[in-house]
Amino acid sequence: MTTADSSQNREGPLKGVRIVEFAGIGPAPFACMLLADLGADIIRVDRAGAPDPTAKEVHLRGRPTLKLDLKSDEARQTCLSLCGKADILIEGFRPGVMERLGLGPEAALEANRALVYGRMTGWGQDGPLAHAAGHDLNYIALTGALDAIGTPERPVPPLNLVGDFGGGSLYLIMGVLAALTHARTTGEGQVVDAAIVDGASSLMGIFHWLKAEGLWGAARGQTLLDGGAPFYDVYKCADGKFVSVAGLEPHFYAKMLEIMGLADDPVLAQRDDPAAWDDVKVRLAEIFATKTRAEWTQLLEGSDACFAPVLSLEEVPEHPHMKARGSVVERDGQTQPAPAPRFSRTPGEIHEGGSADAAMERWGLG
Image (cartoon, rainbow, N blue to C red; front, side):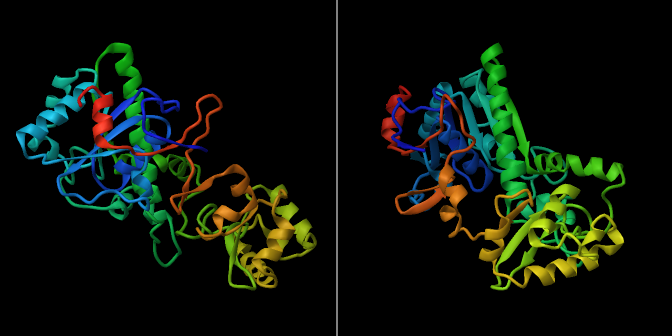
């Protein structure tokens, strides 16, 4: 992946798409990072006096910041002028905040009837909790996702990947790009209400199916994909580091045992008997504890054993596979993910943010 400046010559599958982003936290700026990586021309609007983004703030890469006093009439008019030039607006405030600033959907769509107005919240624009404070953990708690993740004793917070970024950022992106397609076809913009509770609930779709099939519903930490199955779990090695095994299909599990020289182990042969899972797990834990992570990696990685070492963030860039694909790059001394996904004709790039003045001029507002 290359690094490019923020000129109008930036490339990517979203080249030519203009987005005005109102600065926030969490899923909205992360969504804009992804859109910028794919070539969208974004101007980020932040409050006057806000600190300048730093190179360490990876989620703010790829776009300049325009600082405005959003309570002033002049700033409001500037923002509406940006809306008039933009394809998409993205904001992540509580419901009603943009309206109080005079920048709600009605005003923005009056400035540009084809504008896609993306709204990122936790609870959504309406409903009994719409105006309540909350964070990722609260939102996924309401969807059944948190209850399904953890040990039999308690749910465990899964970072903020499930809510903020999975159910939030990615559904926001899908929504605004779908609405952009509609706007370019019809000339009509619309509001996209992207709520983390909706997105995270959608992510749980397969588990609703598993529950209906009777394959899910036992106590947490005791089912197929939550660490209950001995063949889909994490094990500690002799050096205190961990490895992951995911032989969901019997032939992959059999391949692991074959490579480990355990094909005839009577305890491990009971993989398909849930009543024996605890015994199988204890036996596997004993075995994995006999070698270091590096030794198990040398033995199992690259085979059909469905194996991978559990790496720290510091280790990821040096893993041969991640290094070969350039999945993690270094920029300004900061490691960060490369643009994803990958495109054969219009590859994504990490763009320089550039200056707000240059961006305004590029949009014809300088």
